[in-house]
Amino acid sequence: MLTTIDTVFASWSRAQVFVFVLGGVLLCGLIDYLTGYELSSSLFYLGPIGVAAWYIDRRAGLGVAMLSAIVWLAADFGAGHPYSHPAIQIWNALIRLGFFMSNVFLLTELREHLANERQLARTDVLTGVFNSRAFAEQLEYSLGLVRRNGSPLTLAYIDLDDFKRINDSHGHSEGDRLLRVVGQTLMRDTRRTDRVARLGGDEFALLLPDTDVEGAGEVIAKVRQLLRESLDVAGLPVTCSVGVVTFPQPPPSADEAVKAADHLMYQVKSQGKNAVAFGVVGPDGGVVRFGAAPIPLDPAA
Image (cartoon, rainbow, N blue to C red):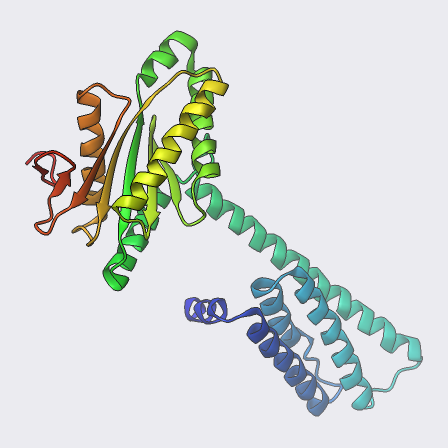
């Protein structure tokens, strides 16, 4: 039930949510007026206030909290609630306003905390790029778009050459610095629609939606050049081997897509490193490397 409600509100625009919230506050005020001053319905105002704070933002939540206090005050006044002193009614309204606003702050703090936790769960702590779990989710989503829209997708598998030598000769702190430079460069110099991930160790992946073979060549050429420049500036003369596979049609699974790019990358490694191999999935599902024989999706084949 709650999941369904969350899905509905999340799919609405901010304006639609605000209209719903406004109607909810007015409805609460009407009920408050009709039931009279003997029955308190302050708790019901928390519904629209919470929706505004959670699905719009804190400012909207505070605005709706103020509106709710005013509507309650008007309903209380219209119901003819007798007070021994006029200031008591104002005092009660201010107390309710404080109660409403405190709930707004608690909800928005909780939402920010949950958002940060979700982000941390999807981010590689060292480099700031996607971790392998987040990348797998994004890859599945992108493959779904390929199946639905028929748009091409390119996956690049990047492995740093002789990374172990950096750790052994300069220490793990220097190895960590190298990984951070690579991650930051990839995030900074790829398109907003692209996704960067660290799959583990010194292995990175680039997911390039709506990218055909020609587009992949341009993006990867730029990425390799910028990586080389960034690593030279950082005093880290490290090269990388890259396997790039373009999917005009979706592969059987996300795992097979990663295997295909990984397999091309290892071919580069075995043939001298510091290079890039491009491939495209053929009609039979095999990856055809440019200028080479077809390579099965299953590396064991």
